[in-house]
Image (cartoon, rainbow, N blue to C red; front, side, top):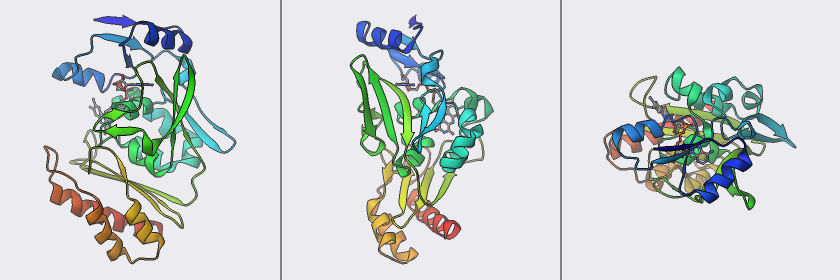
Length: 266
Ligand SMILES: Cc1cc2nc3c(=O)[nH]c(=O)nc-3n(C[C@H](O)[C@H](O)[C@H](O)COP(=O)(O)OP(=O)(O)OC[C@H]3O[C@@H](n4cnc5c(N)ncnc54)[C@H](O)[C@@H]3O)c2cc1C
């Protein structure tokens, strides 16, 4: 295997352009698992862990900006994330165990694109923007347009995720993950919600990608009862049976989570 060690972000972007294809390595918590199981065939890697340009959490003009290498531990301890995006604090504290939280990054969760990724419903409900950079410059992609299919994204081979930006979120934020046990469990269903005049609701593990629920959101915004909104939700999502759960269970839990979100933020 080959491992390239860039000294700066520009160096990394140059290597991606010159030596493509290279797989970026951040915390490696997904990549090592895939290599171990033989589902990852890449043999040439780019170590981005040391790139300070991809670290840091700050607020500029009211927009929360989190570097791609922000770990779950850093997110969970950041006063800025507590203030602006508490549902991401809640999600970060439920990812894996302490070791994974120390190593796993927000950028890795996004790029890996598992529909069960716990930060993804939060970013979808928060109308986040993914900042991508290549030697040609930066582009900003709304999170809801970032995935094109199961673990497929708009990232080009010469681009890195450098940061995620979240505009001010008005309204109570809510997050809940349902898994087999409290730690080290992958979500069977995961929901993030914002209780605004037009509520924003996103679900993970119920489709090939994380999904927003526009019809359910519209129903609630129009003053539907919770029961009506739960009926809309059951028609809006089409989960599947897989190794982790059944479609019937996921449908029922998703509707229950909507009820819990509504009761606890009302
Ligand atoms: C035991 C265990 C428990 C886990 N529990 C959970 C859990 O509860 N919830 C959850 O959501 N996940 C969980 N995970 C998965 C994993 O920890 C997360 O997805 C984590 O955020 C991945 O980040 P990373 O930095 O380790 O990514 P890496 O493994 O380094 O990379 C993952 C993918 O993203 C790409 N990538 C990384 N950074 C960038 C970047 N800046 N730009 C472009 N591409 C990039 C890589 O090339 C690779 O394709 C678990 C993993 C393990 C091993």
